[in-house]
Image (cartoon, rainbow, N blue to C red; front, side):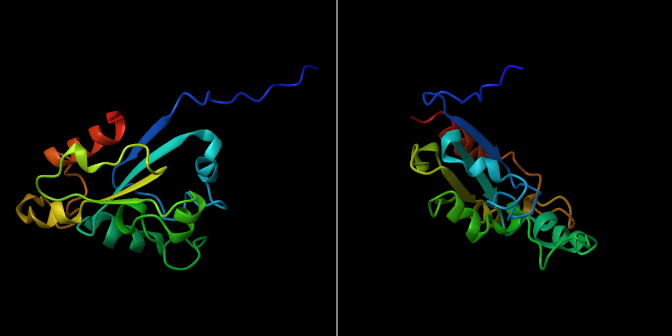
Length: 160
């Protein structure tokens, strides 16, 4: 039987993932949770995670739905509502770059390759556009049509 060699991603390759107001628990990236492997520094992965206090789906309804999950321990919050847990930030070995996205935000607001975890707060942008809420149940959960969000993503993915 031939032993399988573990394949590593070449150091010259950097993976970038965007989580737009992610609807999973804010602690799922921790070292002891489901997506713990993503915190491995050898993976050469950068994550942009957006969050918003104006995301009614994640800030209000997600925790209520999780009350039905009898396996959950304590109060459960969504990554896209509350942002990553303090332990997640610690597991990524940085406080994470915090970016506030408001009206007029451009790609230049993203610091390149500075942190493996970038947390972008979309609350200022959503607060400036209260009329765009189409449902009292979702709030600003699905409104990704803002130029500032496209600027944020482009800056994260392509700025060198």
